[in-house]
Length: 331
Image 1: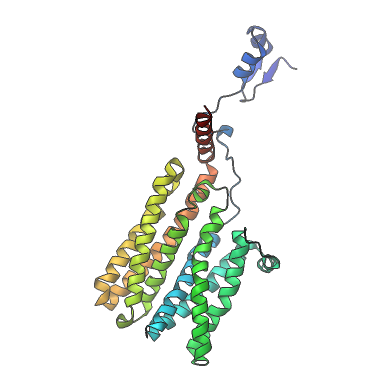
Image 2: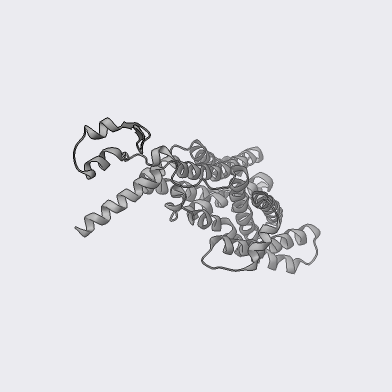
């Protein structure tokens, strides 16, 4: 070895230092190995690899997929209660949102054939595999429901497709919560209990917002009620998740997009339920606020997850707490 050696923490140690510090090898190792603080580890480097997903693509996919699935459910309810304009708006909106979500997904995958390759197997333990098949079952039915409504042909087939799209739409609106929870990203993985409710509420608020934005006042009753219910579920689930996660929920709690999404969703739902009953302008403004709020929530959840993956303390500190708890239980 040279006269000057480099310690593990990057500082220099001379041979004179070693010779002037008698003692056991254990004490010398303790002096040379840096002690990690409770706040970080790996010298501030991320413990996890950042997910290779891009915010415009995957966050947009989360939002548009939820809007599509919930809109199909609203369309079926509107058709069963004799509200043809609301049903048509929701069907066409669901098909458009589905097209946008598939574009975002395929664009992030890089090559369209990668989506088709996922259909080669069905693995019930894989949220990605199950979600791919849900989308495959949902897409043709949503397209058929919209096409038959716009053309006026084969109404019986269109009603059956609408019911099928509503059933599959519930899975489309929520399976993405299981998809991102099945990762090592701390804010997503630890929020697995509340994320399905958060995504379901956000999707319902967005679908209600679309109905308020485009349907006439005398047919928008189901959209108003769905928006109010969705906004309430979204805000309750987000608050509960942030509190339960403790320190891991810090990126969610300080997310400006999350706070903006909750405010827009609540304001839009309340405005739609009150002023939106009498004013077409108020109903359209409420619908736009609900759609914007749902998008902010999805983008906020996505960015908070990426932040928690990049900061090592959100991975290491929970592991240390679990290890301390296990040691305490053993003793």
